[in-house]
Image (cartoon, rainbow, N blue to C red; front, top):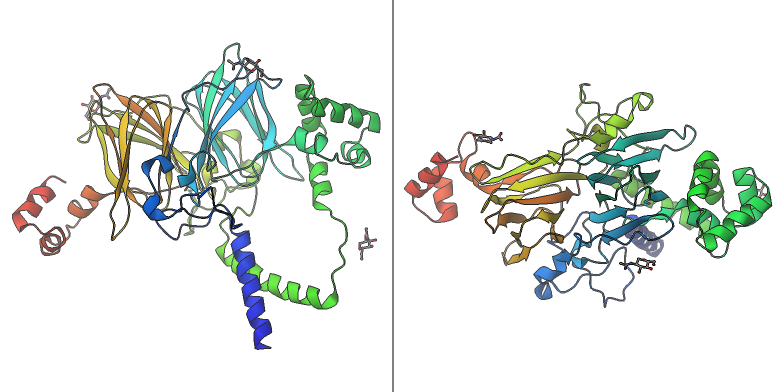
Length: 465
Ligand SMILES: *[C@@H]1O[C@H](CO)[C@@H](O)[C@H](O)[C@H]1NC(C)=O
Ligand SMILES: *[C@@H]1O[C@H](CO)[C@@H](O)[C@H](O)[C@H]1NC(C)=O
Ligand SMILES: *[C@@H]1O[C@H](CO)[C@@H](O)[C@H](O)[C@H]1NC(C)=O
């Protein structure tokens, strides 16, 4: 009896680990070890002593992707495959280049919400809600505009201009995955039976064969196909994918499995941070204390709930520190509610600093748009090791969740950075302000002991905050 119970517990634990997506970190970082052979959800960790600044670094987001392909777009990723230090942090970036009238074809990210900012040009963007509404929520974006694509929903971008367009997007997973609908449905290997697709799309088999051959040869009809897929409703594809053949499992085993599943599900539900609906657009006017913000009536949701404008405008960096953070969080985009992602633009005056601070609820991935920055973070006790790097335009750096970090403009020109955070509301604890500028002040008795200086030194600093 006891041993069966133990087995069950083990099963449940294994399953929980397997089910967990981007779990909250259990250490400062878990830099992916490419030589690791143990199969885990994500990657096994490199020995922390061997970790170097380059593990958190990637260079090249300033380089335009080659858009000479039928779709006329190119995605350049900066995820855990490029930056091993992203492992376990639930955040990544991509740069997307679009030729004139190019598209990023309808696709989903099975593991991530996406928040996209237009750097150049103009894009028509949109996503389709799930069954039964299949409502298209769409918007034309200009430079500096921001739009959110909820996790798992089919979405696309279309360059609606005669010039190239560039976007930068943050995704709420170290490895968001992408399912391009046309390829998955008509280009799978082996192919999905034409009988299935003919019924799904309500057309004859010849039409299906036509599409399958075209996708396989990656022909010019991709765009036609995409219009077709959108027009004939994605919902039928989904129902086909979900229905599976009956499986015969011996009775004993099935009983055990059911029990184990029950245990696992109970645990998973308690732990679940994944979305439980297409979106939960924040409705801040209602009075209800919840973790996050209560949802707006989905029928009243509109494209502007997922939209923000103005990230092309420089923040006023004439501050005591010489930097200004322009945050785009759930307060600015109600559609970000429950999605675990947000972004910010950071402007630096010459020699300006974004002083040492932590984000209690988020890891951060930063890319330099202009200028050069010295960045760094400090590991937790007892090592307190500083991991630092000088970044140029197009360079990317990761700041692990909760760790003290800073950015410093090491130049006579202004600098601009773009950051993404693995929380809709990451929070910021600027250490100088928090420790010396709290209201009321922390007693100087405590601070003299903590910093091992005399009271006058403490009073001097407190007077500045
Ligand atoms: C872009 O891709 C096309 C097609 O693959 C290739 O012919 C061309 O040389 C590439 N251009 C550059 C600049 O790499
Ligand atoms: C699956 O099970 C249902 C109910 O037991 C049955 O009606 C159906 O024929 C089965 N399908 C297959 C493919 O075995
Ligand atoms: C920037 O802020 C400083 C200090 O608050 C102020 O004096 C200055 O006028 C501001 N500049 C702009 C362009 O708003």
